[in-house]
Image (cartoon, rainbow over all chains, first blue to last red; front, side, top):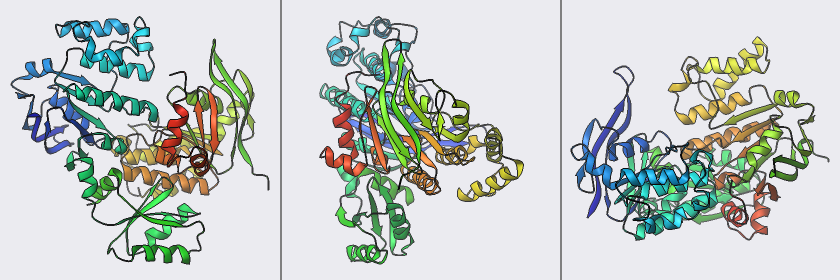
Length: 306
Length: 247
């Protein structure tokens, strides 16, 4: 069963003179119980899309349903059955941790006790601070409280808008572990992120940029679409090496990736020999050349160029 | 040959009440070096950076930045550094030219220097002909690149970059790093924080803060060797997991 269906959604902002097309006809469907990632940089349209699906914003055209309900006609039902964690911390700063949670439970006609099982694991980590004002929590604790509040009415679909932006690598990992445990409970999760490496943690992802979908697939499927052989090259002077590789007319792309440069050729064949010759001519030392599997970021950049 | 040091910190400490935010950190940064300053949220990075920028007085310890003492010469430090973060960069309602003029003026550049810098910067960023565009109308990636170039418009000894590439698309992120390399090649020292671990690998050396201390400091290659990790991500996870405090 499909939990979220998006068909040709467009959204424009601004007046006649300066129109910004935030969404240029986006379509996708999310299966029930899936973790679906919306991956893209700032300005891709992630937040507009989430606001439309949570009935907080009207699209200019297109249709969308959440849990079988239409985002325009059935907005009241949708608001009852979805959980939404906006990108900006939106809880009441002057209420305590417990007061915030009680508030959200009450407006959804439930109690903390009724759905405690669902939030237990997350909430227990901030329960020692339950009398502290939400505004005085650290970033990581705010995030856990916001997630608890988004879950307290046992939503069928959870929308998380950039939950890990600005969060360090360790906390990001822990947050994703929490999401995978929620998935087991049957909750459909739509999560947006600008971090390409998080794509691998989703069941399926939509790569989006400037309001358009670049690709929708499983993470493996996306990397499988990258057809050309990809090479990782490393040498003593990386900056000089990058300029030299880029200057080669046979090279299609060269991007730095940590300690390596990732390189593709316009006409694959003898790639390794060509790179060896290039590094030899330039007298580079500590040269290392090997073929690698593309990651999501390689694919994203390739799709951006086309 | 003795390398010129742009930052020296010795047992630099900052306490807020009974909370030790920065706990006796000792390190040096060479001229022209790209120095990655990593740590989990709450490890003490921001507090340490504020002391080095002359914005916050240390509780104890010693530090010099661009040869100036952080206790007594913080006004001189402010003149010798550049600063840019994702949160604070440019004035959205000023044009590109006006932003350059404003920052260059603040740093005391003469009119002729400003003129020269403006044309250099527009050429370097491929923004010729767009001088009169409002910054608000620039895509995020361009804003960030422009913000960086403006942060070094006065040729500071060192520039502090606080998560400069958050949310930026992967191609622009790499173009941004090309600007960093170019500035470093001109002798400007780069002090950068990031949550992207691949970016940590672009640094000459990286320090990792855990609970207010610097628990590791070395080149990315050596750190990966020491911690038997395939990437800086692996190194970071091993160290940051040890943290007792969380922000």
